Image 1 (cartoon, one colour):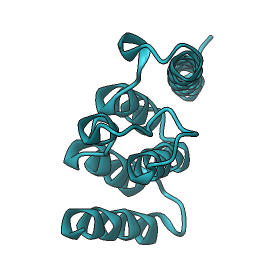
Image 2 (image 1 turned 180 degrees about the horizontal axis):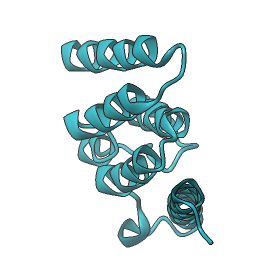
Image 3 (image 1 turned 180 degrees about the vertical axis):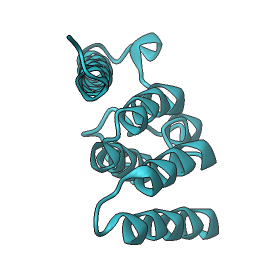
Length: 134
């Protein structure tokens, strides 16, 4: 018979699999945009935010933070090598993480029981404040 802890482990595994699947889809969107340069296939803040939520729900704050850092890097890039890079400032800002993105990762760290979880949450808060001041 299934014990409550076995059921919880199955749910956790399913959430992690779903988050990983969403991340793969996002990666395919990036690759497709890099190849075709078609605006309709370009991921935006909502695309990344969806993956952030998936990792947060799966208890994978570290993976969420990796996605958030990628968003920050892409939003700052202005060279021709990245799908985020363009002469059009609105296109670059369409990947800039918003308050929801930061809050999702802060919340994920707050729910994580690791020894550095609180420090990581504060670091994300500081990043959000730095971005809003720049």
